[in-house]
Image (cartoon, rainbow, N blue to C red; front, side):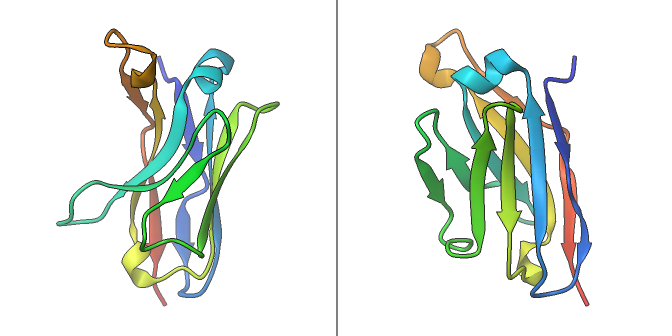
Length: 120
């Protein structure tokens, strides 16, 4: 059962913009800390941005000032607006719903991943 559905990846030139979307069920969206991670070839999986239920955000230093995470509670969707993209932003981006703050019986969910390629 697919619980996180991502969209919005693609090919963009350096300096361009993309917006990623991740739709979740209402229950997951209301309970989880939502985030985006990425993994580039030969590199470690890394946090890009997270947003709490209260709307607090945090970002990787490498994307601060260029990326913005937001959520639409009516649509149960979290977005990652990516501006001023650089070739080093090329990676597979994964949506994450972290439910572990609810207790030891809870886990985190992952989307299927969407490819972002920044190249001229």
